[in-house]
Length: 190
Figure 1: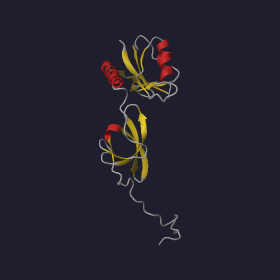
Figure 2 (figure 1 turned 90 degrees about the horizontal axis):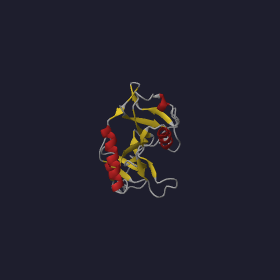
Figure 3 (figure 1 turned 45 degrees about the vertical axis):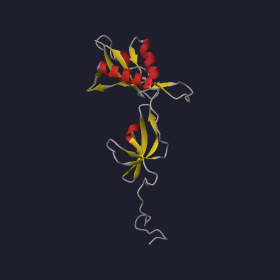
Figure 4 (figure 1 turned 120 degrees about the vertical axis):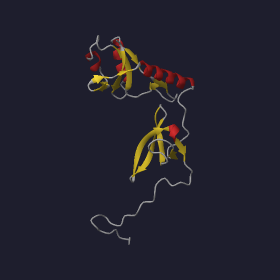
């Protein structure tokens, strides 16, 4: 019985893997989204970078037919066995892509690089961050958080961000160093 499975590819190899498997008469679903017209090569790109789906019956077709495809890292497995996806998941992805296409693409965010933002939901709720830029067409963006004194990149949904007032200071004041290490004082400090 044919079932849907998830394939994990090397970066930018989704189309290569899809073409090879389609030549082998395997049904492939590569979710794509329209990109901005500024893109020179193509106006479409994978919605899930490095992932695509195939509909196959492993009882009639050997797994090795797929396993050694150029550009493919692996078939997503659990306990060494390929994990089948319910057809409802594939239908849901197709429906969601149609909704995004009907809206004219993913909604743009209104943040610029360097803007101060509050995270309104999720594990970093109520934390102040610096907007770094978009990461995926799936409404995810990258922000810089001050975590234990270090700026760390975190990926969050753009819908979970709210612009912070301009008078808010993004980082707490740093304590000045008083030594150069091993107790040697820095001249000019008390």
